[in-house]
Every structure is written in structure tokens, then in C-alpha cells.
Amino acid sequence: MSKQQSPFSFALRAKSFTHAFAGLRDMFLTEHNAWIHALASVLALGFAWWLKVDPAGFSLVIMAVAMVWVAEAFNTVLEMMANLVVGQRYSKTVKRAKDIAASAVLIAAVGALGVGVCILGPPFYRQMTPWLG
Image (cartoon, rainbow, N blue to C red; front, side, top):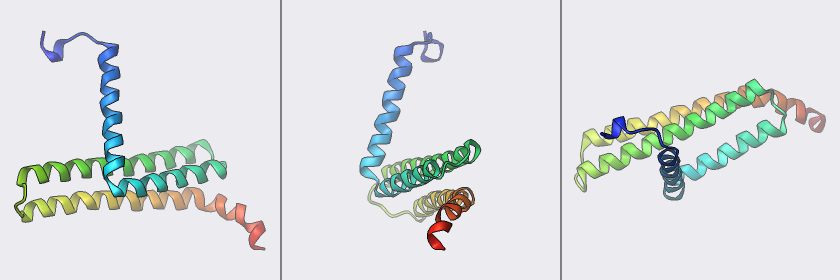
């Protein structure tokens, strides 16, 4: 039986989750930008919870956070693969590819910031109004 035709196995599915969590751990421990994303994620989700954002708004915040993490993961993989291919040599094409991949993270982060401002801004303002006078 080939791998594509193997029967379903809960053990193999569990093992695939183990690999996914290992990759997430690796990214978090080795990529400094992941630390920034982690802080921003905790702040965004924490503010959404503190401000008692409605479920639809909270879902949008979750999707925005996830979008940034997915972009960062793909950017990290692309950079690793590009570095593996070119080694120590400089390649203008690889530099362009890495820069464009990094711009995808920037686009996702700016989009997430926009979602955060739209969803969290009004309730935050209402929460702070008594303090501001």
C-alpha cells in the first residue's frame, strides 16, 4: 500500500500535530519577529477580551492575528529554503524573493492593525472616556 492509500490512523494524525507544534516552537524560539508577533497577539486578544468585544469582532481579531502568524511562517520557510539553495552566494533574485515575502508579513501586520483599530478602537474609547473627562 502506498502512503496515499494507507488507512486512516489516529496515531498518525496525532503525530502530524506533534510536528506542527514542533515547527511553531522552532519558529518562536529562533525568529525574533515571532516574539513581536506573540506580544502583539497577546495584547490584541487581551484587549478584545477586556473590552468584551462581541463574538463577530473577536472572530475578526482572531483571524487577523492568525493571518500575521501564517504570513510569518511562510516568510520564514521561504527564507530558509532560499538560503539553503544559494548557500553563501549572493543572488539578486533570492534577495527580491525574500524581500517580497517579508512584505507579505508587513501587509498582514498592517491589515491586522487596521482590524484592531476598527474593532477595538470604539470600545476602548468608550472605556477610557470616563477617565479622560
